[in-house]
Structure formats: C-alpha cells, structure tokens
Image (cartoon, rainbow, N blue to C red; front, side, top):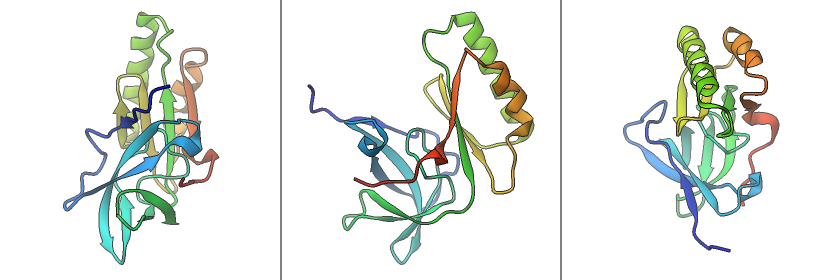
Length: 164
C-alpha cells in the first residue's frame, strides 16, 4: 500500500476570499483513507474561519459555515456554527457511455445556471452545488430524477463533520 496522500483541491472556489486561508480536512473519517481535501477559508478573527468553497468529499460542512482549525491552523478540526446552507453533490461514473454523459451533464449545467446556484466542479464528472438557507433544489430536481442510472447524488449533510 502506498503512503502517498492524494489531495482534492478547489482550483476555482465558489467564493475566493481576500485575504484567504487554506486548510486541509482529513477524509479518512468519511471513508477516503489517504486523501485530504483543501478548503478555502476567510479569516474572521478569534481563531474562526468561514468556509468559502463547496466541499467535494467532506460531510457535514457547507459554504458559509464557521469552522475552527488545529493549533497550527493547517487542519479544520470542528464546525463552530452552521450557516444553514446545504450542499448537493452529483457524480457521473466513468462507466456511463460518453453520449449519455455529455447530454446529462449539459442538463445539469443548464438547471444550475437557470436556478442561479453556486457550483464547483472536481474534474468533469463531480459537481457540488450550494443550496442557500431557505433555497430549494426543486428547479434542478427534475433533471436529477432524469439522471436515474446515469449519475449518483447525495446531500453532504447526511453525516456530521468529523475531524481525525
């Protein structure tokens, strides 16, 4: 087994804060041993930070949540306060035929754009969508229902955040 760590990064965070702070989340508690996810944060003072990206694999964390970091300010170690936003994620497995994948992806992109939602892509097959507090996934739900057998989806809040 390799001891190399794989990093999940956010090249284009939904909100790029200025100033920005980047910290890591160990993904082992969520079933991804040997992986870390980079999280973009906005420093708030008092050792608290606001999440400014849409986590691809972390559970229990959404854009706008307030988090605390470890003593070295390198890893997220807890959620101080949830902002109430939810995170909806869709993944298109590589086994999907290319023509079906491209048509389904275009449907998702159109639904997201029409709903005015913030989004981040990890590669071209994994999308995280911010659902603001009081917002609804309804505008895109028809599209998601049509993806049965083409894509898998989940809410990031089906599990609580856990630090290692």
